[in-house]
Image 1 (cartoon, helix red, strand yellow):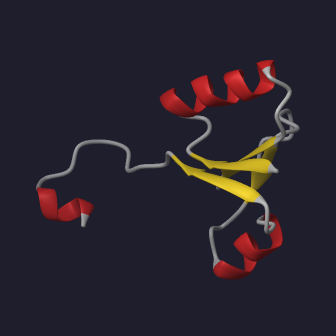
Image 2: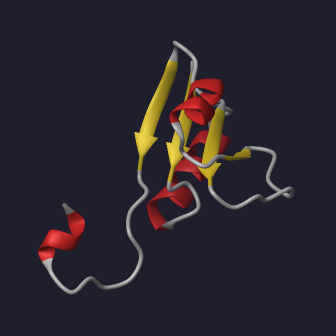
Length: 78
């Protein structure tokens, strides 16, 4: 089993990845940006085809990604 994490470079994601690292649990951080320095990070455009290549049957998906910056109204989040 492996964890696949969206938002893994954010505030909560950094805490989660540090915990998984300390416990030697397999994980991958999904990101739109490429970071060749992080062996646990994989670049994706979040398309269905891209995600099918990343996810396996026994993966645990943790979704921590969100919008950055203030929005004008609540409908921006729906």
